[in-house]
Structures are given as structure tokens and as C-alpha cells.
Image 1 (cartoon, rainbow, N blue to C red):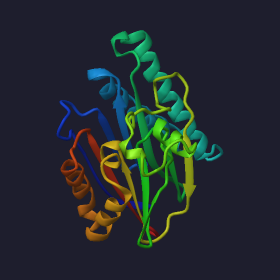
Image 2 (spheres, one colour):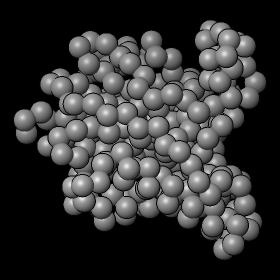
Image 3 (cartoon, one colour):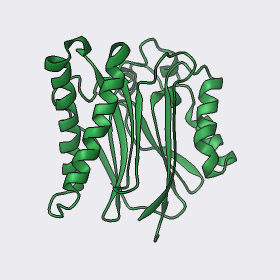
Image 4 (cartoon, rainbow, N blue to C red):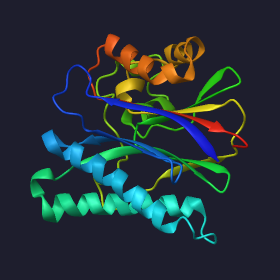
Length: 244
């Protein structure tokens, strides 16, 4: 299967460095957004190491037809978490506590797999409708699910950036994996919270409706900057060529 892919990462308007990392790997149909955290350099190191590790594991195990892609992703996320934790604990103690979110899209044997840890997101635009595919691993989302606060209150609550699950902060991690068949005329968008924290789903829907696919990524980054651009912004748009 082949894909049209548009990708961009931007430092935003308030940060000195970009701690996001993105991957566009057409050889393995693997596309990743990772949003690092942990001090001035820690986030940058963690996101890069996470992306590098997952790409390595996927490439190494792609031919294992008897092993489920879900298990491959689970192993890849755990290995990434282990490497980041080891680096910050033993090799570079000044980076202690670093970690990263990581959301990915992987097509293997005609099936699409969405993996996620943290509050970076995957959206699906299909049939003129927009869905959020991933569940945020964040304090705010847990409070919404528990009924402590409403969805309308969530964007205004202090601490909205606190995540409850990340890659690397602890040695082990569990990844959420969604599996689906590709459909004609659908598009997938991966993004860091530098986009989703500033742009509502309603606004993102407008971007999809008003833009050609090749314009969506740049438009998303522009809208995030208009809304303040207070974080790094990373966006990948993936359009499957079904039957291609």
C-alpha cells in the first residue's frame, strides 16, 4: 500500500528549541510524532531516541509473519521506554526524568495500526466527519472521564499539560493500539499537543473542509501560531491510496 504524506514540525512562537521529533518512513509505511519533555535538552533527546528505537524495531521485525503487529508495537514502545530510562538513569543523570509522548501510524499487511502513549493525538477524517482516534493519557482527561470536570471546562483548567503515561519516564510502558482497515477517501492526522491544545476539534474540522490535503499541515501550524503558538507544533497528514 502507498500513501501521500505531508509532514512538518515547527518550534512555535514561545520556545527556544524544538523538543518534538517526527518520522516519515515510506519504506516501512511508518509515521510518528513524538513530543519530548524534561528540561532544556531532555525532551529533545527523549523524543529522538523514541522515534529511532521504534523505527529500528519495526524494521527488524517486519518479516515476522507469525508475530502480531500489536505485539511488535508493544515491544517497540517498551524498548524505547527502557532505552530512554537507562540513558537518563545511568548515562546522563542530568537528563533524569526525561520522557516523551509518541503517537504513530503503521501499515502492515494491509492493516492500519495506531499506537499511542501520552497526549499527542491521531485523528481520522472520513466521509466528511472528524474523529479523535486516540485517548489522551493526561490528568485533565482522567478528570473528565471521572466526571470531576466537564469537557467544556477542560481547556481552562490549570495543569492541562500534565500527562499520566509517557515513554521513558519509567522503564516500562503500555501502549494503546487501535487497528482498522483502510477505506477510500480517508485521511489520518497525527499531531503533538502544540496543535491539539490550541485548536479545537471544531476548528480542525474547518481546516479539513476548507483546505486541499496538501494545504492541511501548513494551515494547522498557522492556526496554532495564531492561537498563541506557545509550544512546539508537529503535524503529519497521511492519505492512503487504497488499491495502490
